[in-house]
Length: 465
Ligand code: PGU
Figure: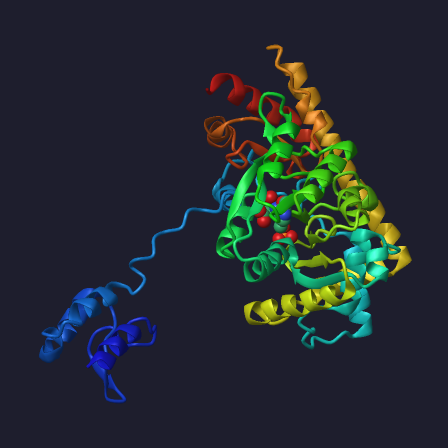
């Protein structure tokens, strides 16, 4: 009986099942449609009605997924969905951190198009990649991160595995922590990119926050950060944004990075860098990797997740890497073998297209130089709108409020300090879509829209409490 009831329930999801009447299929009752129809069907199964399992079967027929609540929209990607639904002409999407041209159109880099043409000319195949990804990509990405001549690479102390962009690479790192560092805690900055919490939650890795942003100074709470890293249990993992901290746009100075490295070293913590914006913050790949290189140069063991979503505009290609810099080549090899073991049942092996693009661009001196120029152009456009937004706000607002934080922040974002109600006003009244933590993506802003945005910010800041 049990098998009949369960079979009935599962058949109700079949789009091809007859909705009106009970049928038999290979001797089992097949019942589809809504509860009413199901109950009708049950009348033909009096023995089933009296069974203790029936109440389950009825509930099941409403939907086996009845107990699954509606998930809230994603705080970042959900903003783009809301933006699409808005029919206003003046709407502006400053939610997701994705580069737009001055005309507010998505941008495919010229070097990416060239690399794709090369692929077609070569007639590259679509065979599976190895679990660890494309060898040429893994080499290129580690060299880009650490510098080609880095001793850690020469000594084969770097385990690199291609990941599903920054997110997937962080997730692999989290899985490694969960499996081999039982009970270890991860420290993340307050605030941080919202998905960090989801990633560690889903990997079942406990996390807590360290102080980072000081709303009073709209700057870094350096003392708080150091204190919290110091007081964490020895051997914790400390998530650090390699450059262009998301969402604040506030990075430690080189001197502060040294002190952060001191305390992490003292406490035997392991730094876990998230490098999602290399080259995008300053316009220089080397400058933006200086934080990671400083830790590696000290001989520390470091985890680094990389993403090519922003700096090569490969958002949808899902290309990135997890690198584990270890103190010996033997342990690096073991770590790599385990990263592959973790990847295999999750997604088997990574996609090839983005990996080939990165490998071709980085591996070809002409394309590499062109990429650097395009990256500088993108970073430069964001710097220009940052300056223009500041100019517009300061020329319109006579309240005496200090808006200089806009110019001090770096990278794609500006952390405006607007609270949730003020951010709601930006969206509801001004059709400016942004995250509720007050972050705006300057990469989605044009010079022409700066005045409008300045009006929206000034109104929201002064007229909404
Ligand atoms: N790490 C940080 C700090 C990020 O800001 C992002 C992207 C990622 C990792 C992951 O990017 P991948 O595309 O997986 O490589 N943050 C953007 C993009 C939207 C999102 O939340 O995924 C953002 O707007 O914050």
